[in-house]
Amino acid sequence: GQLLTGQADENLETLDVLSLRSGVLVPAFSPILFSAYKSFDEGGISTKVTIRFDETYINLGDHYHTEDGIFIAPVTGVYMFHWTIATGGTGFTTQLMVAGSVRASNLVPYPGGSDSSSAMVIITVNKDDHVWIQIYGSSKHVYGGSISYNKYQSTFSGILLQKT
Image 1 (spheres, rainbow, N blue to C red):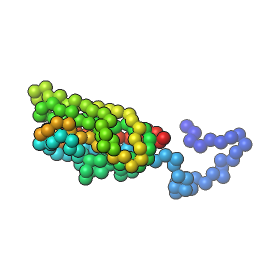
Image 2 (cartoon, one colour):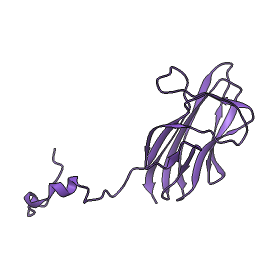
Image 3 (cartoon, rainbow, N blue to C red):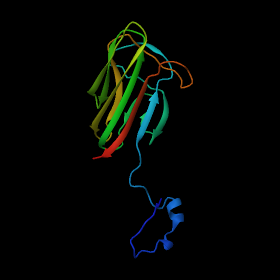
């Protein structure tokens, strides 16, 4: 297919392709996204404690922080967040927190064995807002594991869909 096209009277032969390759032309939109996972099981988590997803599959822009499990929005915009929590304990709720307020929640059931539950939300987030997943309930257990380990995995992902 044709990647570069011009008007009938334009001369594309004079286009400096090296300037394109050297980064002289800056992209209009730099992607902001992350996908993190919990690499270890954690039990005894208290209510309103942040679930720390300590490893990432991808973290474009480095706005998700594995040391505390918090994403800091670099721009105001519409974001999509998705999380999956795997557990083997009693049922509980997880909450998506934005700037200290609950913006979405999800019930993680306990059917008598191991299970997982996922949720997705599309919301507006302001620049510099902190976004995280927390437990609502006490003494809860969240499964984790490396990507090569055959086990349930808990994940948290986010992507900027549109700047506003």
